[in-house]
Structures are given as structure tokens and as C-alpha cells.
Image (cartoon, rainbow, N blue to C red; front, side):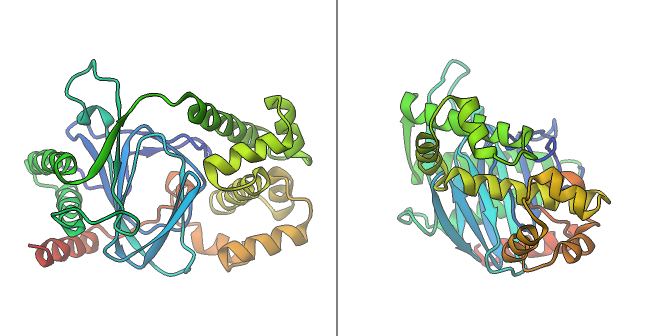
Length: 319
């Protein structure tokens, strides 16, 4: 079985839509990774995140929560989310990405099942959050197992996890909310335009023109979906683009300033240092060994043997 630590993820530039590829032998994309930070993105899959070390801040739609060691969180399909490391400390997370079709009784079921699983914001289920944490660890552990038949243990644990979510977690079945969906689609389109026209000076005004709405209306939609003004979204995406160019190209600072639409070198350096506690040069030197796709989502390299040892200990502690 091929070992993976953040594999199976394909991203074009730093597009906010994440297309997830699966091993044909598995029904889940599971990996262990430190997380630095990411731009806002979304995908069609359920995503379970558990913190093995340190802490991570997760921004989902307009809400934000800080997860510490032992915490876990479920992100539902198509929820716009981002990761940050506000403590600027080393962390390590396990992540499971599960196809939504596995949660439906048959192919004709087009309802939307939304789970409320968060060890920091939701009431604890009867079995306790550590029960789910251990299930996650076992799936991640077996995913890193190169034994020929490990895939069967992954599938078995995944089925048990899904059954436990239905049995013990809070969930509801929803149908399309047109107003909320329209707001989300507006912001998705806005982000696409930001990517396309990032180098433009008056980008917020350009967005309003492209979307056919006032700045006030656009800000209202942005706050409702992401909890941020459109200017804050633009600034964050520009910073992520700059980080991508620093880590994955040898472009000089002048090129990066122009490509990302920063008005001045002073603004760029101040903003960059506030967000990363590093100068652009330090960031480039630190991160050039990271692979292109993983940097885009903030995922960093980690030792497979060490990851398996940590997961094995988590499983042992919660037996």
C-alpha cells in the first residue's frame, strides 16, 4: 500500500476549489501533516481534522475556532474554510477527507447531511470525542501502512466511523437554501475574479463592476459567508499568492509586488511580517524545500515513520 502524508491533493495555482483525488483502493483520503496556513478553499468532501500536536485556528464560513492538541472538528461539504497557525508554533494534524456519497443510502438520495462535530463548540456525544479521535487515528495509521491488506482495515474503520457519526453525533438533513447558496456563489465568483485580476490596483471596485453590485452589498455578502470584508479577503489572497511565488519560484520582489497587486514595498513587507513573523526573504529560505501543491493549502512535509509512531501512541492511549 502506498504511504501518503498529504498526498492525493491537486490544486491549480492556489484556486479556492480543491479537487481531491483518491487512491482507487481506498474510500478516504487520509494524511498527517503540519499546517502553516491556507487561503480560503472548499471541496465536495466531508473533512475531519484532529490535532495531534500544537494548535490550529480553523475559519469556517463566518466562524472561527481554535483547536488544541486532542481537539477535532468536522467540516461539511462545500463549506468555505481556511487554516491559520496564530501561535506560530509547530503543530501536527491528521486529516480525513471522505466522499459524501458514502453517507447516502443509495445513488438517488440527493439530500445534504450536515454533521455538528466540534470538540470546542458542540456538546460532547455519549461516546465522547476521544472515541472519534481514536477512530480517525486508526484510519490514518492504516493509510500509512504499506502492508498489502491494510486497505481492508481502512475500509472497515471508515464504515465504523460513519456509523458512529450517525449514531452519536448531532446532524440534520437539509435541502437547498437559495438565499444562503446565492451568497456563497457570489463570494466564490468574487474569489475567482480576485485570482484573475489580482494585479489590478482598484480590485474591489473592479469586483463590484464584474458582479453588478455595490460595495456595500458585496461587503455584506462577504461578511455573511466568510466573516470578512471584501478588502480583507483580497489582502489575504494576495498574501497567499506572494507566499506561493516566494516558495515555488525565483521571481524577484519587484515582480512579486506587481503580480500580487501590493501598492508599495513598505506595505508588502509590513503585511507579510505581521502575518508570518518572517521577512519575505526568510520565508523563501525556510520554505523552498516544500512541494508546490502542499504549500498552497499550508501542508508541510513530515516523516512517515514518526507519524505512524504518534498515531500508534494515540490509539494505545484511547484503548
